[in-house]
Image (cartoon, one colour):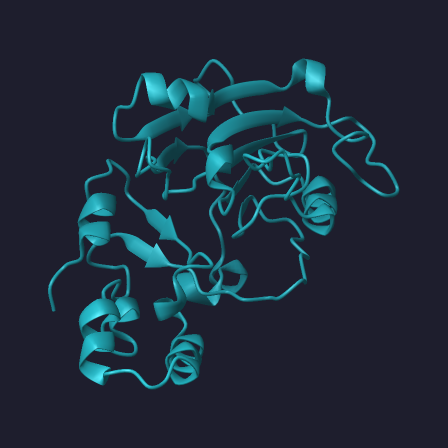
Length: 234
């Protein structure tokens, strides 16, 4: 099977591990949804469907098991259950409300329930996408006490939060990959349970910038036990 341009694109990143999730347009990664869309669009020529989108399961097979190419496709679907416990890294499709969630029309497209879960868990990093125009990164400082009903108005210490990068800067200085490092020896090391690095890593851009760069992030993590790892990484 040929390696797709997307796989080559990710392999070019100078990172030991690449984590990938499917977006709402990546329906070929979800075989039942792929089959349902083809059935609803009948009559269709099967050969033309395969030529355009590949066969059922082909897109998933491109990623393999992640051991050879260092690219891991995360397939953990928990619906609206945002329980994060003590997770250090959280990856979701959409953004939490108040964090890089504005659309071009000014709509606030983030999820308030997701924000509540993140504010309570306070992971080291929360990576998401979906709102393409919200691409960027921000280091959020949390207030000491979490509100009973957390929101971006009450729980974020905006005066001590720092914007790392945003789309406006990217369009002036596009280098192919966006990098940020927050380890103990860096200028702004992450402080566990008091700061969270939010990353909007939307790859698909617009007419002006068709492809937005993936993020290469360096943070320090405690060694995880096998029991604590998602099934996608075991």
